[in-house]
Length: 112
Length: 110
Image (cartoon, rainbow over all chains, first blue to last red; front, side, top):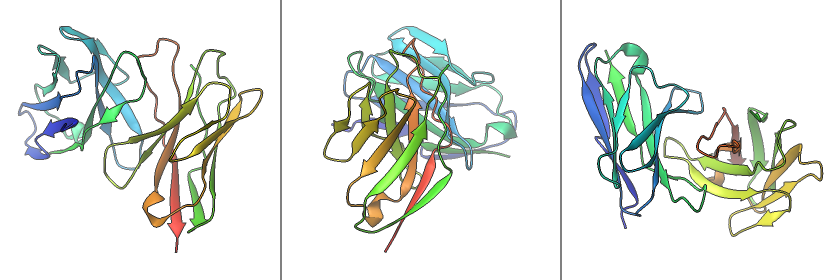
């Protein structure tokens, strides 16, 4: 099992550009999460999904959209990137039977 | 929402026990305490969780006080690879969100 994978690993965007981050898990987990981590800070929840076709807002959802069209994939979109969105983005997943989250390796995004 | 308070940093000598404290004085009766760690810039890794009783697994032990207002994560024989940021998290009643906070940066010294 690959666990949780994230694509891409690194990306540099100009202000106003758009992009999509892909999270994939092969553990058949129902729940998936997107977090951001800024330097020297803990993780903050952006959006999450409790199952295919459903999404919900987390702590810092503004400027982001998400989709969960397939159970194994959770996409995070930035429609118009801003420098304030420069961060490391982590995806995580878990089963409905446990609150142990499995994290991906992260995507380092820089918006100039 | 229950919040947690952790010291920002701690040192521990290699081979000694590392005791990481966490305060969660507003914890509710059905809220669990979770511990995760983040090594360098990797994704966080689950360590252990508990409700009332002390818990132990192959990585660590979790000691929760009787009033549940605080807990301690114990790494019995710290190694250099245990250098990481350790997060104490209280799971919300809804169960869907985790608040990680800023954690404790543990440095294991040779």
